[in-house]
Image 1 (tube, rainbow, N blue to C red):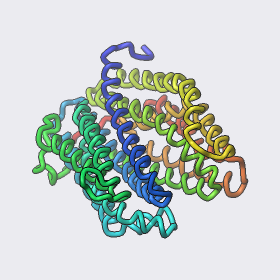
Image 2: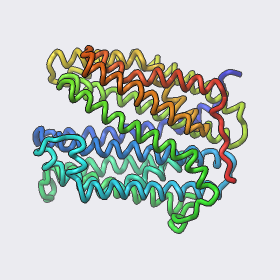
Image 3: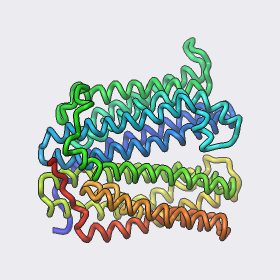
Image 4: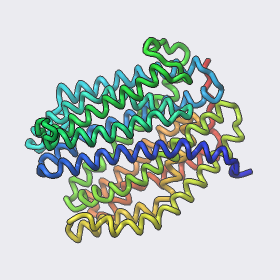
Length: 450
């Protein structure tokens, strides 16, 4: 049978997808509400918060790579019910996470202005954003450990605790932002710095709730704090082979997205603003992509771990078809939302035209984009084909998409629509490359504990 008709398969997929989508919506909602509250204090404060959040967004891509890399191994071990290698994988992943997060913590707390200057040369923005970035830096280690623990629990189907933690953290962030930004309930009026205080409180709670549960009560891995320094042994080589390419791939992706913003910023204010406006709507698509690809990686990883390779191929066929159909189904919804969404902004007609062109190009590529996400970040990653994905990701972005976009904007002086298309051409290209790899069957790589 080419695709599956098993209800349990679809039920498991939905149960894994929905919490991921909700968690990401909560994250987007936190940033959206922060921007609204800070928006009343002027453009310098808005810019300072925006650039600090860009630094944090890059850090989140690294966290995503750390967590996803651990999922590649733990999902297959869970499929075989091999608890000891699962525990060792968790310990290694958390140690690597802690080490990398400490570097970001040092940069954020000790050299916050240096970190901000990587994004802007505006002295006023750097001066205002320095204290904001320093407090954000205090949360890097907490957020990183919470994120890795979340991914590890997802790999064994435990999604409720991280979702509850994110939901409560969202409301804590909202409440304490209101209190400290505007000086309510007798608290000092801290304005921009108040948003950071709310964020620190929310992330501290999320760490205690999510990582605390993982280290005290979670029984699938059986990880406890005493296991933090557990030796990797023979699994260390497997971790380097299968997990680290995911970290490098997602880090390069985060860096490429930062460079895309830099390219737009150096072309014109209109294209940069249009990209920012269209990006908010495009993020909704990314959330759906992330939910489906995350679910497919776990389901297929579990199946390969059980040794049922034929079933994993049928599951892969089904996920590719679902991704393509989802992409087609979402297009008319987004087309209907485009007009009302753009009317929320008071912008020049030229900027609106560019934003609309960007969105239309995104809609045209959407089915292929969703297929590319699901095959690369889901099926092939769940199958352990991480080194091929690192090559495919880096090649399509760094050797094709970014150079073509830069040439189109700075040398050929093409229209904004062409610049946007070429900077996003990686998606159809990566979809084609990864689909060919999928058809060869070489993506299935069983990860052995010894």
